[in-house]
Image (cartoon, rainbow, N blue to C red; front, side, top):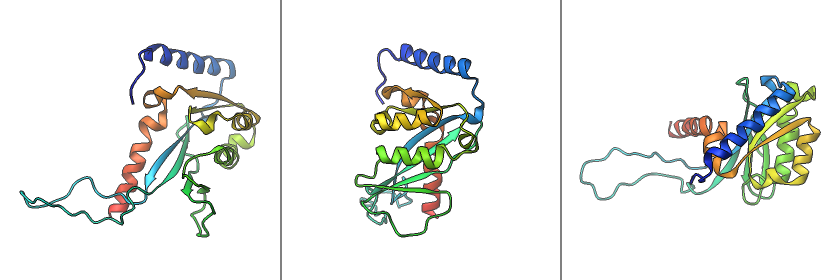
Length: 196
């Protein structure tokens, strides 16, 4: 991502906001959460091949779906606990397949998170964590994605007794914990599974 010129000021302002929230509310680590969406391709061919030197054409077998994707919503808490994932498929109707227990499934014509998907995530993942069921004060950190900024979604967040820390759009690569340390290892593990 292209970083903004006032990067340091924005980072300091975000840190100051979060520190003030922490001082004011004294959240337990189990009540500080982070959520992020990441696209995953149905076909994940390897980035390298083993061929004879000098070959002009190298064929890679694929299912020809490397541009077809779905979205995975990952979330974790500051105490290290991972929350249930949510998968968003690019379709209009819910698939009839049985999915593993604990995976929340949503559909969207574009395969992205939308307003309804955010509400489902808040209801079925964020509020279902043990501390969410107790309705204790919490802090949710996420980026400025469109569906996160909708009034009805913000209302659901506040109704779950959570404060919001919204990371400025051009700083997710620096400040969003999942974007920085979680999404790449997740995709690497999926690629390993796909390759075996």
